[in-house]
Length: 207
Image (cartoon, rainbow, N blue to C red):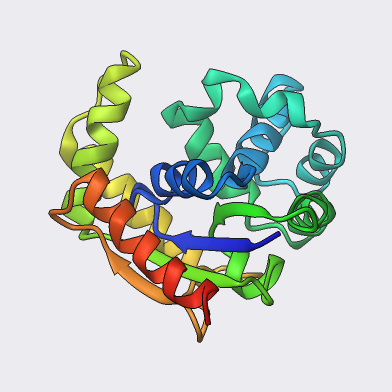
């Protein structure tokens, strides 16, 4: 079974692409970001501190697959907390085996260190991004759909802060794998992004 690793910036469309590729190729799909969101939710529910490595690691070790379907994980506050809990090396180590075990069966995984850390030997590696303004617009639409009230300027500021935190953390920083295929989704429809990725995957997988 093939492994397709998708990394990229926040709100770049990698989750939508991941689901699309999984459906296209008949592969299981894992949004690894939800592992960190579920970890953050556990910490917050327990009254803990997401900036504490101890609190985060204890929560990460207790995560189960069933928790990943909770709709609250897509909310703004949980997303912000997840970005903070994900900087802890011990948290990332605690979630490493979960991701590796999933990939061992073949599948599509999206996140921020899939092609560089989790699945460095993936059959296909994609790196997805878009302009900050485009990503802020998409995230703003998503959040207002959940009933949250934030301006686009607020969303953009949070997005830039998150990009900085993700790309500068000491452990598994966000960056393209050396052999990743780059996809800039700015101005592209979901169908166009999927077709672009399928073309890349087909070319690589048939070599």
